[in-house]
Amino acid sequence: IVLQKMYGRITSPNFPNVYPNHKERIWNITVPKGYSVRIYFTHFNLELSYLCEYDYVKLSSGGRTLATLCGKDSTDTEEAPGNKTYVSVDNNLMVVFRSDYSNEKLFTGFEAFYAAEDIDECKQLFDGEPLCNHHCHNYVGGYYCSCRIDYTLHENKRTCTGEFLLDQEILPYLQHLLKSSLDTSIEVKAVVFPSLFSVFPTCLVQLEEGTGG
Image (cartoon, rainbow, N blue to C red):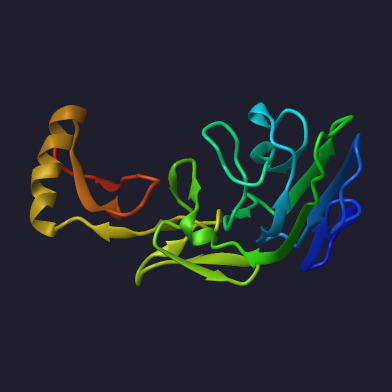
């Protein structure tokens, strides 16, 4: 069952009556990008089995299992939702209900409600680093980055770059070092270093040929 609304309700077959044996039902909930899916249960009563092997509700998102639920109350080895809410890792959530071939008792299944929820991308990481180098601005359905004064947003829309001139008092010292290493007469006109906050370090040295030997 494909669900694409921003909110909704799902239940086990025959709810609020006893659910049938040997039944499987799958709901694929998809909301717009920039949103996640939050789901909570208002009723939950499934057969309890070790590690929820028999009857269960499984929640999956982003290629991984968020929870496998069964019973009515959580135990040391099984999880029931109780008052807990679950949130997808992206804009998709798959809910799978499964019952085995027989139940010794009568179980009334579940009722759950879901809703789209804006993802705060500014709290996420990209390769272990903040999404934005300087400032991150979250809005409903997305985000954008901005930079401090005198910095420019890189074409990747995440990184801020900037330059500053080397103190003029250091230029003669640097000029002496370059003359010694290059064995030639040069004049250092300017040295530009990257900003302390730039992640693309470069150094630009502007040289002019001197008149000395």
